Image (cartoon, rainbow, N blue to C red):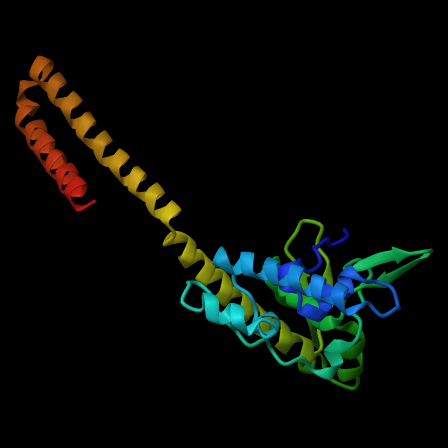
Length: 255
């Protein structure tokens, strides 16, 4: 199994990251070219904000005028990113995840912070524990059978059927939990925003109306059948028809 997660999209990059992605060479770009790249990036951010997407504070800092322009629009949310410990600036080393081939070598293309952030964002990983037999053996030397205590490592486990785990340090575990909370917060706000969007409101309106119309149609059909075959049920279905018609009329009046 090789975990494949897309790299940052343009609107998730800072101005510098976007500029670097456009220019891989070592020579200095002319100022006119730099301005052109910055303008392109700003247009991308503006389009994303206009659609109500969530843009992190680190990116928004490059364009304060866009923040002012769209600050009244919902759901624009500025969330301060977690501070990154020095340890997490090192490369993320795993035998399968976040590796790309350069020549004959497989190299890691993510820092620990970047990798843990994306793993938290996917929601496809969960914290678990795995026994460390070596540490357990050392810790239980000279102990009796009833004093035996296994030593566990904190790990991230991949939910996919392909599986896969990654052993976490305490700092990595703390950061993963922070980023999980961060992304859960954003996903919840996006979910609420979607539910309140005009498109979803119209969809809900049509669905509710269709259900009420079906209820009335069904009760009318049952009343017709009762009049033909089951006179003892006529009163019940006449009452149902009246109730369903009243409910539908109230719904139409309200909407």
